[in-house]
Image: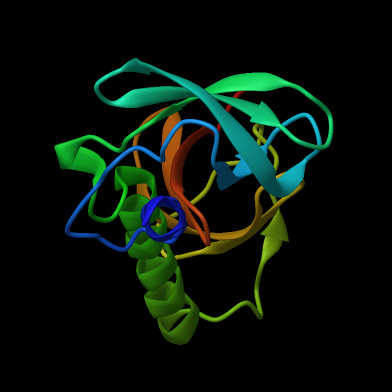
Length: 149
């Protein structure tokens, strides 16, 4: 059951019962030191909602916490990413990437234009203020400066 809870929490799917794995059992969990999912041994229950784990590969120790009630559904970051992606797709259909220009903070931009940012990739300008532009990228909506001299 603990494997099911950990896997569902990772995939952002709700599970009805969240319980800690039993002490001295193996628990499949993401190890940051090994940089992959490995089996961990449950050393102890440190609180009602957390347990101490030890990676069977590298021996690193970490604390596993049960997901809170507010984060058991989709995460906020995932929902922001999906809303930015849907807005990006809408702008791509509406404007297209034909007239995209390289982003420069010294250039002045208009709404509904396409830019190519070195770090964030292709984005569409949603709104323009005096010194900032709101740009919809595939992964997030970001504020960038423009018209700097």
